[in-house]
Image 1 (cartoon, one colour):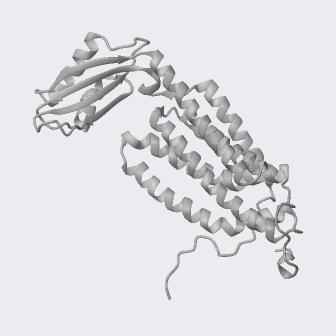
Image 2 (tube, rainbow, N blue to C red; image 1 turned 90 degrees about the vertical axis):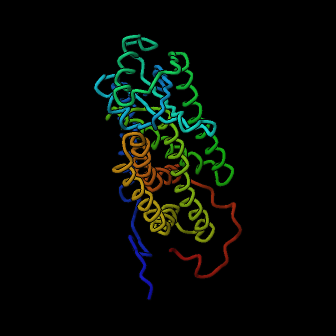
Image 3 (cartoon, rainbow, N blue to C red; image 1 turned 60 degrees about the horizontal axis):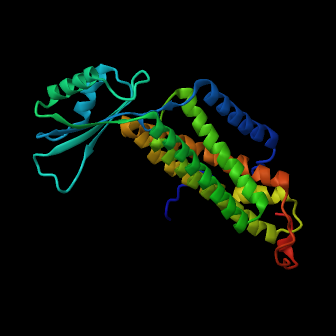
Length: 321
């Protein structure tokens, strides 16, 4: 007999609406608290949104990103991003790196003294290293990136709203978007509270969270629609509870396995991807919560029509589940 791991029983009868106003109120309080945190603490914007200086280096020795970062760290320049530049046309003697340093004290670019200090620190690691190009990114470009990021998240949310509306009913669309707004706001709020660097990688994480959360919500909505056809005389609350219970095992297994990979990356992935992975980890948790305790509660409050389906056959299938 094959061994099967079961995190939850195959059949559960949990009343997810027993404390519906407590859970929904808690979610609403989290959204409000997140908004207040953003207004009070602000976001710790990275180079992408604050502007700064980009330095292109070239050396004969292979690029050691870790050594470069350790050499620059004592200079206390704030947010510094270092990456190796790969190009198939580069020969073995051409090793190029890109170093991005945030704007210092309101200045759009690093001064000559700061550039000399960086060059000296890096040449202590690799004497052959030299600066090939130095460019500055001003606040105008950074402001455009912030605007573009907001448009990207808003556009994805609107597209999901239209999709759910067309596939189900407008009540489902409102519930799904409410859950997505909850996920995004709570994730942004935790970044404001903890002052974790907020850059374009986090925007990518937010868009990924949108996709993950709506996928989980659609699974519940699909089962709900099936049960609405099957149990026409059963109260909507009971049909919703049945749908969540029937998909609970899938939800827990999917979220659990995703979190296992994310936690491993969070612990072992290093500083470069830690912000992105933290956003994803937090997003999976709040996305699972919102699929169970936010989206369906909104749908129940709005109500759904139940006369669009085909007539159900008479018999035991009409009985209360």
